[in-house]
Picture 1 (tube, helix red, strand yellow):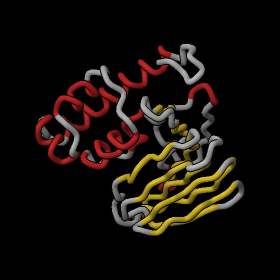
Picture 2 (picture 1 turned 30 degrees about the vertical axis):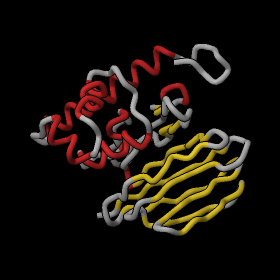
Picture 3 (picture 1 turned 90 degrees about the vertical axis):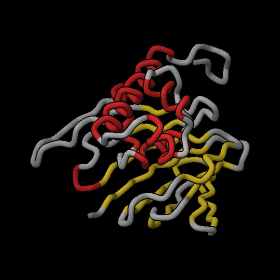
Length: 202
């Protein structure tokens, strides 16, 4: 993978992550008893793309990855390869270099898993890096009971939720129910960084 500065951008890590994502997709698909064709229909992702993703030959965009995750009733973190949740009463440390990172090959968007024990307490925390003038488009609705909280660390973020648009600047925060299509965009000429906490309630 080549970074925006034209230099090599951690190709080995990217290859490893693409391979891990593909293996997890195949495992979850087989556990669900789905063929590639059935998953293609459920996710609206082509069979050819799914095949390349499963073999680790293609890194999906965030939109494609999200549709695959929803079709498999899995979280994106599950497919990326997040660390297992901690047992009750046990402290878990995850060093920065150990973070599972999803990189969108088309936009440069990055999703950093920063929860050392994602899923513990029903919540996970991620840090998103959104380059200038990049939109993630509309992401599919999460299951009912899923909530998202966002706080912008740097830059300006536009969040679309069910036809409503909110613009957040550094220091601003937002809570919303994620059971509707929603999207994130950076419409400025400067990068944006924000923290997201995702809570899944039974």
